[in-house]
Image 1: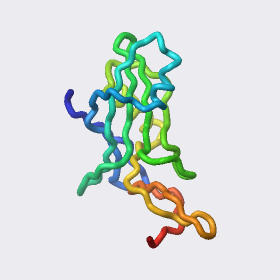
Image 2: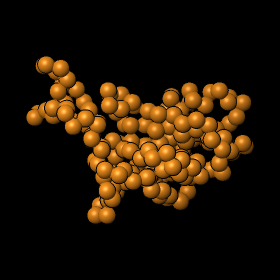
Image 3: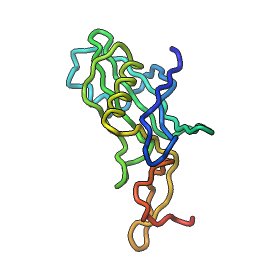
Length: 161
């Protein structure tokens, strides 16, 4: 299967920075969230694919912890796409998001349709770059996602650990 790159919409506050999906490949072990999202069409047979999410700007590109999974039916063209953050859910970000049903010609087409729809709606594709410790209450700390070019809450106190 050829490697595929499709740019995500630009995040206005991040200038030239954007996130994209790449390296669409078949998988044998889709997540339970994707399988649960496909169960309502159990009369169809699905193939499963994964695409990694990378960040890029004019000077460099970097991997993220996040990825997309596609459940695609060759017989009907129906699909659903699951975004996975790569970490446990936090107050800033869920651990996964599932799209509604779509129809396309293959997993790459499904991902291109998602990218186009997100661009039209002004929503950037994002990937979690790292996890950082932040203050949670008076004495505790918790993990929070860090996405280059996107600050969930600039008032979070970062851990010095």
